[in-house]
Image (cartoon, rainbow, N blue to C red; front, side, top):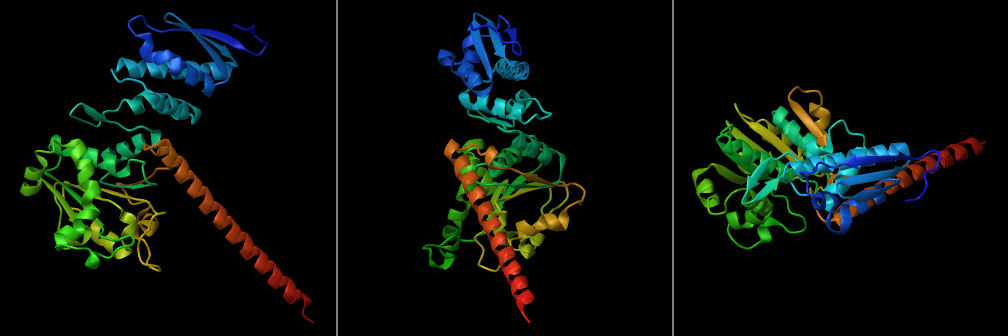
Length: 347
C-alpha cells in the first residue's frame, strides 16, 4: 500500500464475522472496485477487515457506503452493482434518508419477487401515496410511476384498506385512431390498457386475475367510462394522465368517494393530444397547489430503473429540449434588439 500524504487518512472498517464477505465485496471484489471508482479512495480487503486510504471526506463517504451495504445484506437482500451505484448516488446527494432504508423498503412480495423503491424520489413517492389521499406522480418513462402505484394498490387491497382497485387510462392514440382498429369496442380499447394488465400480472397470481376482474374487485376501464360515478372504498389509478384535457382531469378527480385514494401518473413530455389541446396534467398543479391532502411528486431521469441507456436517453432529450428553448429565447431577444435598433435609426 502506498505511503500516505499529509492530507490523506487511513481507516479500517471491520465487518461483523457473521457477514459473508463475498456478499459485501461482490464476486471477484466487484463491489469493492465499484466503490474505488466512485470515491477518491483506495480500498483493500483482508478477511473481514477493509482498509480505506484517501482524502478524509472521501474515506468517510466510502465508509458510509460500506455501512449501508452491510445493513442491506443483513436484511437478507442481496447486493448488485446497480444497488451499489444507487447507494453512492444517494450519499453524494446528501439525502436525509439512509440508502439502506430506501432500498430495503418492501412494498409487495409475490411468487418470490419483492417490489421495492430503488431511488430516493421513488421512496418519497411511495411515502406520499401513504400520507395523502391524492398523489400525482410526474416524470419520464421508466421511473416506476405506474408500477409502484400498482404495487401500493395491491398492497392496500390485500390489507383490506380498500375493497377494489380501479385502473384507468385515457384512450388517446399515438398515431392510430380507434375507429380504424379492427374488432369490437372492447378489443379496440384493450391495447391502451395492456400496460396496466402487464403490471398486474407481476403482482397478483395470474390465475386469480380473471376472478378478480369478473367480481369487480379489480376494474380496468378507459377514463371516459368513469364519468358520472362516485368511487368509494377504492384505490384508483389514472395512468398516462398527460393525455387528459383539463375538463377530463376535473371529471376524474371529482369521482373520489369516501374511503378512497387516487394516484395520477403521467409524463408531460409525451403528450399525444391533438395540437392546440391543453394537457390537464400540465395545468393541474397550478390549480391544486396548496390544497391540503394533495401531493405532487417529481421523478427525473435519475429515477429511471429500466436499462441504463433509458436514463441516458431521457437525459439527452431533456438537454435537447432545454437547448432548443434557450435558442428560441435567444432568437427572440435578438429580434427584439434588432427591432429596437431599427426604431432608433428612424428619422
